[in-house]
Length: 473
Image (cartoon, rainbow, N blue to C red; front, side, top):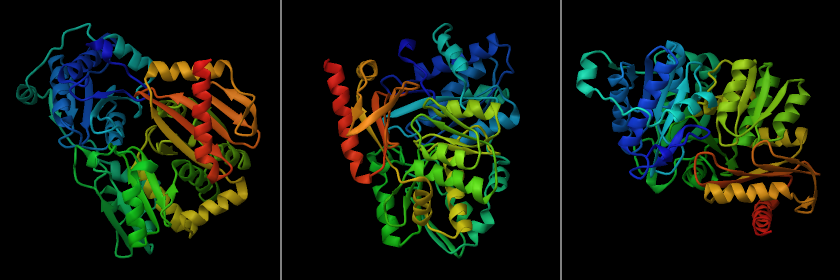
């Protein structure tokens, strides 16, 4: 059964009752315990969980196994955002944390994320080691009540002191003092009404959609991308809001909608925040992107004399950089962003609060800020499309296209092919398209950034046609 468990770019995820079972969760927990023993690590672990079906029960099952191996478990008494687990792990100096969540995946999934002592996603060597231990030892269990009585399982909130960290990074009083209408969509995830609690005041009017627990997520994926932001778009227009803000299922990623109802893409968000931090706040540091991120980041970094780094897709690569260098901002196209002074981790609520601060301090709407960005750094538009493709087929198609890349694409000359993570074609006018098989699900992702919004769909179609032709050759 352990052969089905593979840790991707951010943990292991699988369909509930198919591969994500109590037996497999216990196997994972036993492998974590064995890793701690082999590495002679401090034997303490934090566990949090989200609102998904049976998440609390899966968390307890993992806790029982760890307790049965003599590990002290700090278990959240209720569902909580993933960054709270990372924060607790870092603050308490624990070797590992576990989050039972499938993040933004459809409701049929659940997952097992790992966090390390530094407060971010576990490093590849750590997950590889734990994966290698799966099934080596039969799970040892201690009954939950007995483990609590013996102090092996300690139920405790994981967010003590977290508010002070957020307040040190975002000007909450400026937001509350502004005259704003804001709509939030928590997508039935653990973001709940957290942003509303932070920002709302008599003048800053915040209303939250879908803040209640729903393990089915309204039969949608709790992912703040274009196809799932329609309810937020409608609410923004109906209420005349300045902006709409969203978080995913475990509240570590963000999404947004402009005041006119159009999508405020994650790449627009990170570009504007980078410019805001560098120009308005006068902060300096490394600007870090993953390979599917916007070229605006490199242009802004160059304009302000800031170092820039590009890494493979997966926030863990940003987290690793953050431990090595003084990072100003770093993120990925899926809405996971971190900033200077925070953990090497994502927090969708914090980033959405920073977006509000930026709008208030700059005295402009998000659309006005975006227009300024276009005038100064060029106009580019982004789109991502996900296609259900088996990992074997997706990797084969991308590999074959990489072996015979086109000399031109969509009427533009191909200047460079980049195989850092998948295949990225860099074109003569600055546009690009990236083909990449997901590391966590059976999905082929196609990303592009082009100079004309009207060309986005045509770019994606041309990309899929090129993949198909390469696969048949």
